Image (cartoon, rainbow, N blue to C red):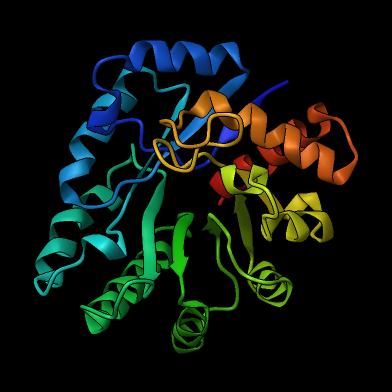
Length: 256
């Protein structure tokens, strides 16, 4: 059984003290691939340093996250772009829109998201990892403006409804399902029940959003097993079936 974590920030300082043990626990729990999206230019170097320690396990992404955007967005993007053309980097992310707290830098968020979506298309359809919080309609409007037929990527930590799920799947995206699916009365469990497993990938978003029974603690890739077990329970299939299909889905993202 091989599991894949399609969204993990274990290059961050929360893991400085015990990263080797974190990787060891991942492998012990059958997690054989870990995608590493970045949030801004400053996180690219630590991410690539971690990647260099085990190029078989890690899948590097580079991108500018909406929460990191400032009014100097063009300079921020200018610094990240060389990494998009770096052969080590296999995806673009974490990118997207976030209007949960406020709409500060709204125009800059739109600019950065659209620019990075263009980068994906200009660089052989590199997969994108999309952060979308309180911004589905705005994201869909961006897609209309971008006007590409199909996309390659994941809606990370998917939190929309069934209609929104079907829309993003139709565009070519996978749904990223993480620890939230294990929470009591989690709405996303209903989405998992109704959406075909071939459209789902698993993720931790480590160090955030640890699944039950680790909720409130630091998350790590080894906990993908709890997420896979919950998806198996919802779908009434085995964890092995979940692992096989979701890992195949994750690998498909890289076969652009």
